[in-house]
Amino acid sequence: MKAFVISGLLLAALALVAPARAADDPPPETVQVADAYLDMRTGPGRGYPVFHVAQRGEAVTLLLRHTDWFKVRLARGQEGWVERAQLSGTLTAAGAPKTFRDVLVDDYLLRRVELGAAWGRFKSEPMLKVWGAFRLGESLAVEATVGQVQGLFSGTDFWHFNLSAEPWSDRRLSPYLSVGLGKFKNIPNQSLVGVTTTDAKLANAGVGLRWYLSERFVARADWTIHTALLSDQRSREYRAFTAGLSFFF
Image (tube, rainbow, N blue to C red; front, side):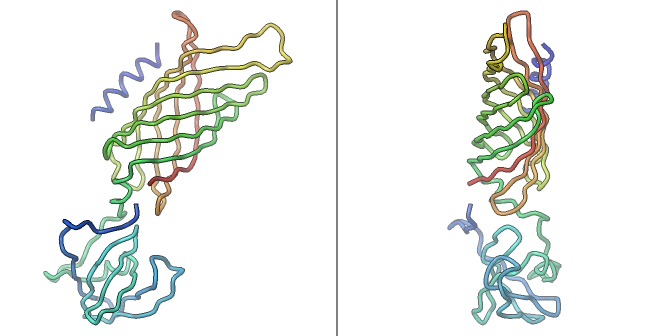
């Protein structure tokens, strides 16, 4: 019964990829180099070599961005990639310092499909799970999960469908809430005598934290209460903690 109360509260809370420029986007913005120089690299990363240096006062047009890297073009035609931290030392057409969001997560917010895997503890036993999610919007997603717990005296298989809400999805570090229903099957070891397989419905409610790493990768940790509905009068609760990695596209 406790799980249903928690689920009701969380449901109330729920009420609350490659970079490209679309044809109807505004024209590229042009800024002016205010620092002594601006390093231009051949690709979006520190591993790419610097092939040109823009000097103070030069105009730089921002063509597109890839995570924390921007592809730019100089008035003389050179094109290259510049890190966001360096572009923070440029000026807008109005002469004001150019500002950027701390994390450029437009691609992250536009993601639709996410796949991942995690390891953790189900009660006190090791647990492995994989999931696939489809985002209905910036804050809501549906998710399908399958998992396995390998205990000392039994093994458990389960699956469930969840609805999750991520109110601050535009942040690199973002909490979320989830509720769901599924199935639970506990299979005792063959060496045990007088025990039977338990096959029951499963309800769950949990909280978690997502950390957008870079590119298409997201780290995730969650704490969940699983309630196995063994009969109309009897249920059993299991607490689980997992941490894992997912990628989106």
